[in-house]
Length: 212
Image 1 (cartoon, rainbow, N blue to C red):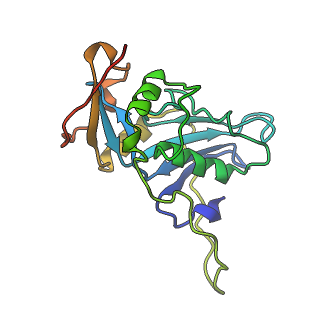
Image 2 (tube, rainbow, N blue to C red):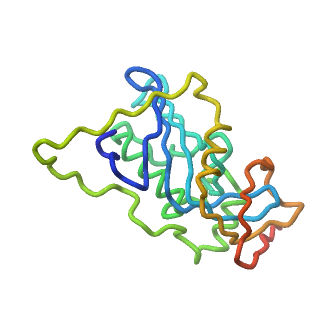
Image 3 (tube, rainbow, N blue to C red):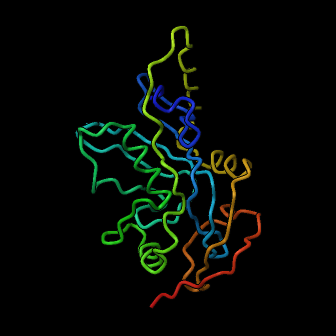
């Protein structure tokens, strides 16, 4: 898997834990959506994911959680819903690519959502999708020329694997593109921490999410 994503700008392995690795962290340089603390739905260009290969993998699906906020019908604060399509025959690299497509709104399921507000909003704004139209998967691997060096090993993660604050702040510092594409009424704003708000001002007129 390290070789498959080596040199691919849209998906990067940022860390591992265990030997062989039981925990992976990935950075997605893909456009997706999140909700700022003021209720505005904004676009951001970088996201971070942690994957834990649970006991029983690959018979049991790995545990996937976002370390940066994502506004999507099939994501919540602690889980990415992969149960609808996970199969033991699917490789971990294929799963990582599929989650990237979900972040970009190339794939989403509003029938059994983890986030009901995002599902309703997505149904009402389907014309905005996908947020990112690029092919998320890396190009097909080519035969490595003679003498080409192997990809550099992925640096192991620090002991505090579960600490997501550092990753969140580093994503903000990286200068993610943030663009406002909607807003929620004050009473309907999802509960998000204030430190998830991006400082860049949106440049599009806000739309209101009508919750009946």
